[in-house]
Image (tube, rainbow, N blue to C red; front, side, top):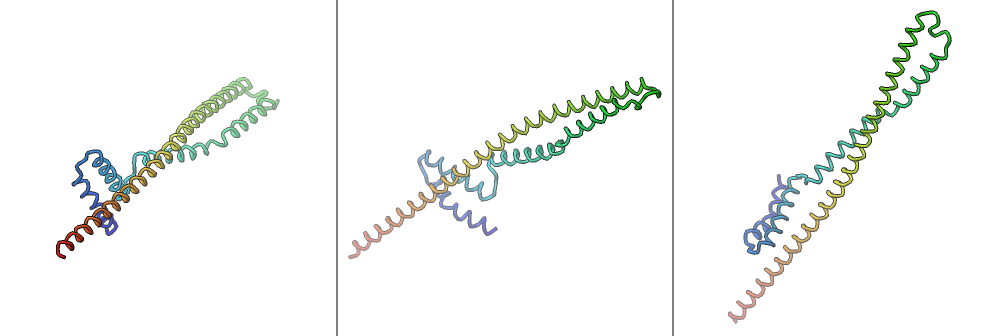
Length: 185
């Protein structure tokens, strides 16, 4: 709570300047700085930061899900090997419902191969979406960095303006004192 009070104490001169300022362009600049400072105080994320965080989460979740499919090609290769072994084994279905067994086995093989092809197609689509999400994440990282740099420039301008106003006020006060001193002497 004290931190907020200190931050608001820093904002008081800016509020006064905005209130006293007559020129619209400078006033808009002061209001923009004020907006950034207030958002910074409350830790509110900018649009770029929220987008960056959103895409970071999407990328992380997609990568986690894709890791689950890493061994799909190994499973498909093992199934193909098993089916080939069954077909090559002369004792596999000879004499016992061989036509039914061969038919069911080939239907099963085709279904598994189709399922594997579907999985590969879906995985390829997810990978392309992952690439898109990574590109968006990188874009929003750059955008958030640019906004941070812009905010630093605004803050620097604010402090330079504040220092200039303090100097001018001190010089004005010194002139008034000197003028009073001359009048008294």
